[in-house]
Length: 151
Image: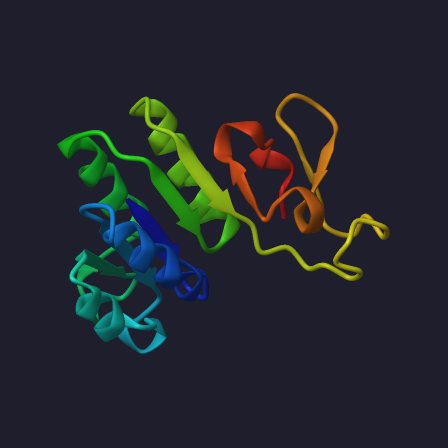
C-alpha cells in the first residue's frame, strides 16, 4: 500500500511499477486540490488500485489521504510505504502501527553535502541519536524515527 501526498506522489511511481510486477498494489494519493495531483493517469495505466483524496474535494474524496489509509488498513494487512509531508507520514506511521502493519517512510530532507559530512539532514531516531537521510536513508522504518523531532 503506497501513500503519497503532494510532491511525494512522484517518488512512489517507480515503486508502484516494480511492486505491481509482484502482486496487487493499492496507491493512495492526496493533495490540496485536483490541480495539485500528479501522475494520476500514469498510476491508472499501471493497473494499480488507485484511491484519491483532496482537501477541497475537487478530485476523489474530500479529506486527507490518511483517512483513506485508515479505511484501507481496516480491510486487511498491508505493508505501507509513505512519501510526502512529514505530518502525513507521521499519521501514516501511527495508523500502520495501530493496525500492526509495517511502514516505511521516505524522507525528503534538504541535503547540503549528500554524503554525511555536514550533518544538515540529521533526523532523530526513536532509540536515541540521529540518522542521516543522505547516508542512512532516505527510506526508514517508520517506527525507528522520533516523529516529534522532525520538521
